[in-house]
Amino acid sequence: MSRRRHPGKSSRKRRSEPFLEKGVLLLVLAGAFWLTSVMPTGNPMLAAVGTSLRSVLWFPLVIGLGLLGTHLVLKKVVAAKQTQPVTPVGSVDARTQRVQREKADRWSSEVFAAIEWRRFEAVVEALFAQAGFETRSQSHGADGGVDIWLHSKNAEGPVSVVQCKHWQGKPVTVKEMREFLGVMVSKGLKRGTYATTSRYTADALEFAKANGINAQDGAGLLKLIAQRTPEQQALLLEVAYEGEYWKPTCASCGVKMTERTSGKDGNRFWGCVNYPRCKRTLQMKAD
Image 1: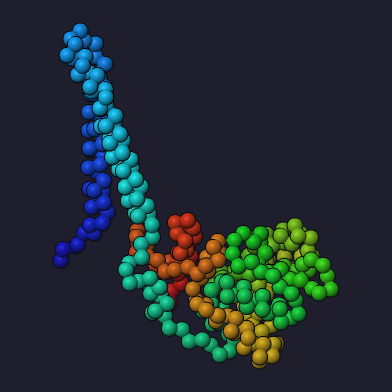
Image 2: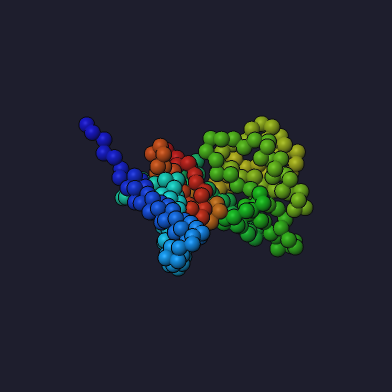
C-alpha cells in the first residue's frame, strides 16, 4: 500500500525558491550594469551607454532585494509551521467530545483525579473560606510560591499562605517543603499550609512538623471536607466541577488550554491557545 506524501511543506518550499533565484539574478544584473557604467572608455557612445545604465540601475536592484526579502519571509513562515504543534482538522477539543464524564455526587479521591489543577486550588480556597478566612488567590502568572493568601478579620495583612500541588502519584518531597518555608520566611509568616492531592515523603512530613507547616495530603483534605455540613460539601463539589473542570488552565495566561497533536511523534498534549506567544504545554493524562 503506497504512502501518501503530505504536499504542504515541499510545495511551500518550491514556491519560495523562484524568489531566491530571480532575486539573485536581478542583483547580478544590477552589478553588471554598474560595472559597465563605471568602466573607463574614450568612446563617447560607450560613455552614453554607461550613463543610461546608471539611470536604470535602481530598477533591478530594488526588485532583486524585494524578491530576496520575500524569500526570507516565506522561509520563516515554513520554519514556524514546521515547529508549531499540529492539530489535525476535526480533532480540536476531541478529548472534550470523546470523554463523557459523570460528575460524582459525593467526595472521594476520584474527584481530585478528575479535576484540573486550577479547580483543585479553587476547592482548597473555598475550604478555607468556609473555615472563616478571607482568601485571595492568583489564577495565573508568577505567584512567588503562594497560591492562596489567608487573611483574618482581627489582623492586618495575611496571617498564612497556602501552596497547592495537584499531583497524581508523585509525592511531595522535602525539597518542595524547604522552598515553601523560604517563601514563608520571606513574607514574615510563621505558619503555612501545603495542600496536595498526592502524598508526602517521610522526611517531608518531619520537616513540615518542625517548621510550622500544615501538610495536607489527599486523604487529609477528604477528612476535612467530610467534617463540613452536607450543604458545604455540595458547594465544594460545585466549585470542583465548575466549567470545563477536566481541561487544564495555562499557568501563564490563566486561560483554558486546548488539545494538540505533536507534528513530530503524533502524541497528544495540552497547549496554550495563545501559541506561539505562549509555549506552555502539559502532558495529557491517559483516559
